[in-house]
Image (tube, rainbow over all chains, first blue to last red; front, side, top):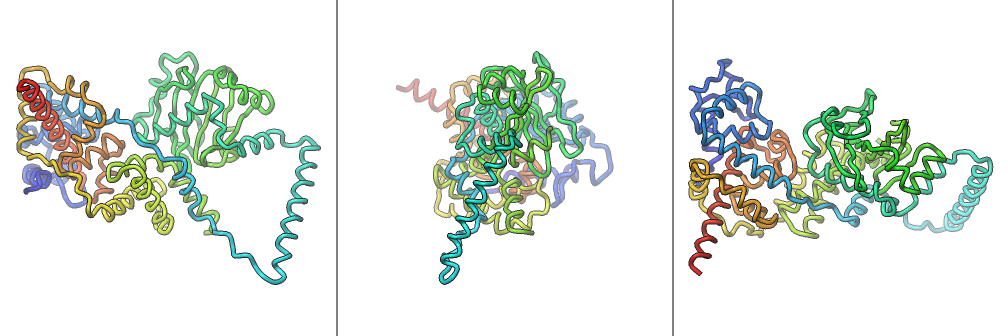
Length: 299
Length: 185
């Protein structure tokens, strides 16, 4: 059977000299001539309608296809078909990784325990371990006694909890929304004005030289409207949720931490989570980074 | 690089993509098999992690590995037994866009559940279905799909366009057939 896509591509090359083995550069890239509608027949323009609908067509070609669309009813219908199918498929729920798989992946690279040594090491190891435990207990007691680092202790406590989000609906919703957005590769636009429109609280982006905002979206957390913002940050993705401060204070655990330390931190499934409030605005950050590192980034 | 630093970087760079990879693996395998594919992908990625120069390209890199894993393990899978003729689907699609009547697609899609839509997509030839799935269901950009499938971007563009057309044609034909069956009974 002839491969229809290769048949069409060779046709595209014939008509406009558009493609080479490295990639599609657009019909004008090699010839330097302006692409005219006359040079491309209806069938070729019809094939570009999908790329136009997906926002993947270079500006010059998009203009030509749009002009063609004004008068060509079949291409207008083609555009409707492409959009309708694209959005129907995008609604398909995506499967998420199971907790067991996530844990297995997180263990990759962890060194297997060394075989127990014989001889003098056999008694030295437990002795050293006992000494280390004793040392830790003494240091820990001293640390608490002088009342230093209450916030730090809070983080440690929360980090040790299995799934802190289980008891905090707003956190649970934020993590689920974050997973959904990641699975969908995030909405393609970053428009702070649009995402803030209609919300009764201001949406402010993080302003730091090492973060780059690339996506914004509206969402609902614990039944209230919120805004999601995604940034590229040191090779990973940082997600920020903006919402009224009251929504966060309403969760008893978060409320208590905010009253004590003005910040709530925790971690779950390898993700750091930091919550803070200021001037009635509540902010929740999630990233695959230690919560402590996340705190340093935003505070 | 120290082992712990390497491991921390590996986790930071690859873990954010775990859910997307599982979703993607589901196009080649079901249930536990899909998760096995992903685990194998991560193990291979860990071994070859030093070859990843650009952290920003991690997802496309992981997809390439996953695709290779799935291809190796799929030898005996004959998923596309009910393949339909392309020309027939193209004719059905042409009919939709040439007709003055309102497009039957909107109504059709409202009636279809997600499983039926996915099954229909998987009944069209693999190269078209793959490109459409990667774009529409997994949110990949044309350039990323080109990298993952090792195809020129023009080919990706063409496959997505034609893939959706074939899918529209298939949905219309299937609907027509079930209407006929309904009338006959």
